[in-house]
Image 1 (cartoon, one colour):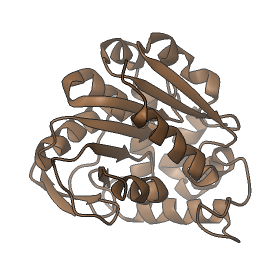
Image 2 (cartoon, helix red, strand yellow):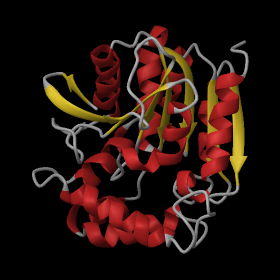
Image 3 (cartoon, helix red, strand yellow):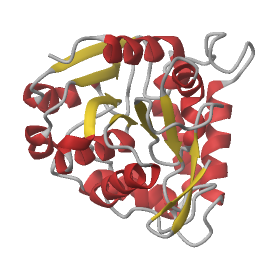
Length: 271
C-alpha cells in the first residue's frame, strides 16, 4: 500500500493482507541498496499470523518518493513519521544493517512508540572502509561485487528462501543494481554507506531505549562482525542475542531462523 509520509508517496509492503491499525504492528526496515523484498518470508508470516506488517521502501528508493536519508537520524525521523501516517501508536521495529541503526535511533527519540526492537546485522560504530566508500561513489558496480562477497557465507540458500537452485550472490547483486538504478538523481549506495559511517550515536541511543531488544547476528558475517555489536549489547537494558549460522544477508541465508527468532521474541514476556 501507499502512505503519504511528509508529503511524499511511500510504498509499504503489507505481507499480502489489508492493513488494520488496531492490530499489533511490526515495521521492517531494510539496509543500504535493499528494499522491502528482503523481508519477504518474515513479512508474509507475520501478516498471516495476527500482525500488521509495514515494510517500506525508504524515501527515494524503488517505489517510494522523497529525498533519500542523508543520515541515520533522518531515516529514524522518517520511521516515526511513517507510524504517524499509518495511525500506529506503538510498533515493533526490526531493522537490518543500516536499518538496524535507523530502528535503534527511532527507539531512542520516541521510546513510547516502540514496543520491541530487533536489530539484525548491527554494529556500533558501523564503520565503512575508505576503499569501499570510494568504490560506492566512483565504481558502484565494483562495490556491489565487493559487498556481496563480504555479505554471504554460503553459495545457495535453503529451500525456504528463494527456492532450490537460487544463486544468492546473483540474486543479491541483481537487487542492488535495481535499487541503485531506481534513483538517477542520488547515488543511494554512497549516501547509505556514508550515513552508516557517520553515525556515532549508537551507544547513547541505546541508553535511551526502554523496550526489550533482540540482537540477531550472523556467525559468518564479514560486514558487521558479531563482536561489533558488543557496545550495544552491553547497554541494552533488556537484551537477548541469537547467533545464526549465516552471513550479513541472513534473511536469505537463514530465513526460517530469522523468522523464528523474531517470532519467539514477540511471544516472550516483555519483562
